[in-house]
Length: 87
Image: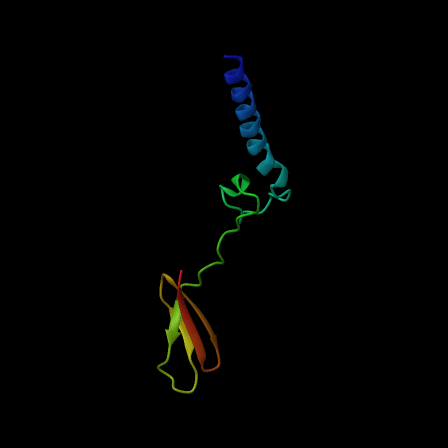
């Protein structure tokens, strides 16, 4: 019975240590709105994804690609190069 109590205390100490360790490594600058609600549960900060500009590539002009409104996508264009990604 005494051996079981020792094992139980060791287990409790390990659980307590694993609970305290993430708090010791959490980011100290938590004033930003871009931290995830779960960021304090991890060892590194979880930042929100970059904003979606809600645009897609339009190739109607053969000389120059441009970004036009389209919800759910992100457009990045530079001259004739244009890339559309899902958000």
